[in-house]
Length: 95
Image (cartoon, rainbow, N blue to C red):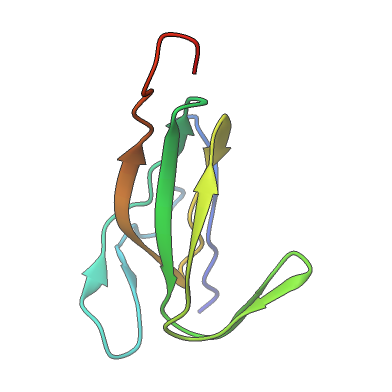
């Protein structure tokens, strides 16, 4: 049986013999379908690596945390957990 992970924003129909199920992470509970996070310039996401993986040119080790800042669209890979979403608080009118 082949397993495919699809990243898309459109709906689709399952073909005969295909099934749809949640992504499981070894040692953890099943994870829900991943959403696309649309971040404005004032938004950020705190992320944690569930296992060691390569993120572009950076190797993220299991348990490491980092933050991505908007504006951006972000689809977390299966190796990443969203710890929380942050919003910048302007301290002055001109900031």
